[in-house]
Image 1 (cartoon, rainbow over the protein chains, first blue to last red):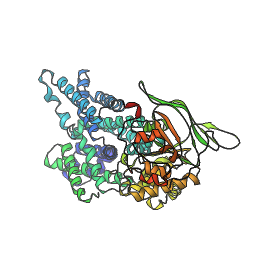
Image 2 (image 1 turned 90 degrees about the horizontal axis):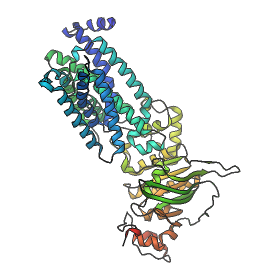
Image 3 (image 1 turned 90 degrees about the vertical axis):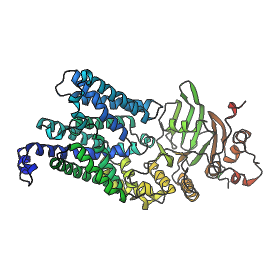
Image 4 (image 1 turned 30 degrees about the vertical axis):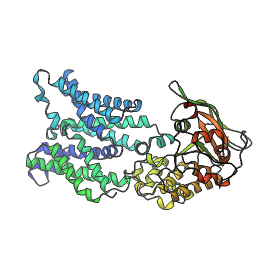
Length: 276
Length: 276
């Protein structure tokens, strides 16, 4: 950690002299690959609405954590989001109703419940930082948690990648090759939910989903293979993250939303190269 | 024109897949019942029937997607007969695949044949095997192509090569040429025909295209919840029951009747028992 501070502190620029910026940069560098690889998954398996719903529904997790008397509601948010992901995965499997409708219902219900619980007595303003997020307040302890989550996520993702690929492409074909599609999809939903839920305090639940979607969608404009898709997504995710962080510092804007705008710009720049 | 007319007796001469008292219930309703079939090696058996006859259900049950009653086993030829569940290969409908994903043919083969994540590339052994499989469908040049860049016929040949790798006991073709142009369809069926002989494969084909099926199948089964007719395409298509269901008039005496069959799904009539 000291090495990190020395290394970044030696860079030119006012921001590099500030400890909170050095920590925020580390957070961005840890989170960017997560958003990139999970984003590719979300975009290819058309789960964008699912991850959006999980981000918004995290509000209920915050409310439940607060009601339970937790000073930091993060464990409640993680638990609630993971459970919700499993419920949605299960409902999609069981029900004949379209999964868009199911996710829409669950999202509306969870957001409403969260707002109702948090606004009791007119105190919702205390929680608006979950809407916008603040990566500049990230503490070393939180960074350690983020690093652990990143490691676990990349491990699961790497081990399941081929199965996920096949399940996304064609579930019946995947099952005919011995892939347990339901288990793979449920696990993947939970991982996405955990990463989204963990991120809302820093990025904000209004824009967190864009950070998953945009780098992967921009990468899809250029990629002609799975490996190229991942490589471009990683590049765009790092680029948008670092650029957004620095711009937000000098422009004094919310970091999460600034990163999203940088990613959106990358998407628009790659759009003309789309072949179809 | 009518294809080979040899027809094995009901006993299992060489190797074959046996269904005995095979049935599927969905809730209270019996979708399939009392299906007893021997699908012989080296033989292409086509399943025809009106919409809702249970053709897709049969394939799904054989794939292990839904539970069934009765017996399903593969019987090997040779001195010692061995029994077991058949290893099933599956060629899905073209329409069910997502073409917008940046996946290549190489990615597809990597996902089923190696443990290491496919973005690390196709391993050397897996590559050799994939090229061998593609050679059977004259598709070696397709290995590096993106799925979305393949023509309909090319994609179905790739999916056929994938289903033959590793070699299955029973190959299921589910409307394999829907959405494929005439030339692609003829090439596909020519390859299936050759492979059935060269590899001694047992193949079950479900298709609405009676004309094409009649040309390529060795044997035809008319299914409507039960097996209602079983024989050569000429026998089955001229049976009174089939004529009644498909609403067609053709005479056995005319050798060219097959070419006059409608080229596409044309079963406007409900199954016989549903009519007053």
